[in-house]
Amino acid sequence: MGESLGDRLKRMRSSKELGLRATASAAGISATYLSRVENNQETSPPSEEKLKKLAEVLGDNFDELMQLAGRVPMDVANMIKADSGMPAFLRRARDKNVSAEELLEMLDKITKQE
Image 1 (cartoon, rainbow, N blue to C red):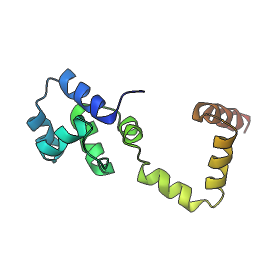
Image 2 (image 1 turned 45 degrees about the horizontal axis):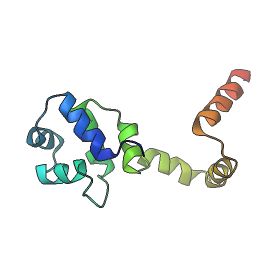
Image 3 (image 1 turned 90 degrees about the vertical axis):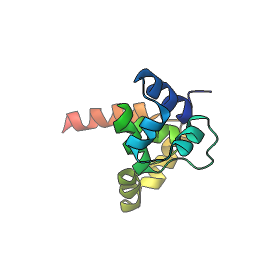
């Protein structure tokens, strides 16, 4: 199994030599909450806003933190909701075992032809 959100946050915080309380304070969350997330004891993942603040404080990639938290960024969710064909497209890609990387490569090929 890969790195959890808690493991990632703890690793990034340690690499920046930041204390738990200082990190929590800078991100606008409680130290208790951050400790629970870091120790994989929090049952619900942090909100998009909290993850964005943690990414800023820790100098980490927001999209990767969102993925580790199992969250879809609101702008992406809104794009999917706005296009009625998008859910079917994504399900079909999943059913055909097409990876995101393969989809991006196909998109690059299509846009280069324009």
